[in-house]
Length: 81
Image 1 (spheres, one colour):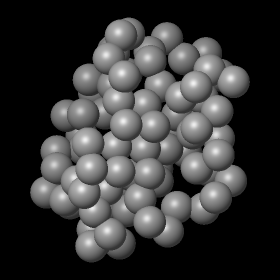
Image 2 (image 1 turned 90 degrees about the vertical axis):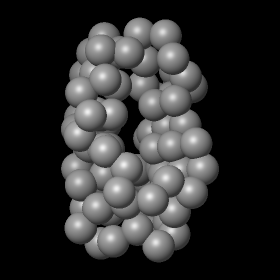
Image 3 (image 1 turned 180 degrees about the vertical axis):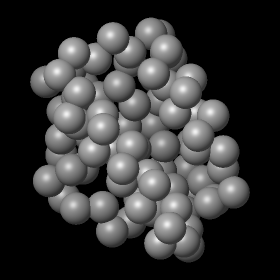
């Protein structure tokens, strides 16, 4: 999904994501999302990165302003590297 606005229900998605074993998910959030929404997304990204054993299919999540190191870690996890 591309250009996702900040009225997207990120909490419902996150609950689903932690149970997802098969769906490939790539989320690119709209450049105009609020700083508060970016902070929540980044918290989710941090939790995914910190998880040692992913018993779910890791999504790729990106928004403009995400630190490159975190983008690369998400990419590696997404691709199983």
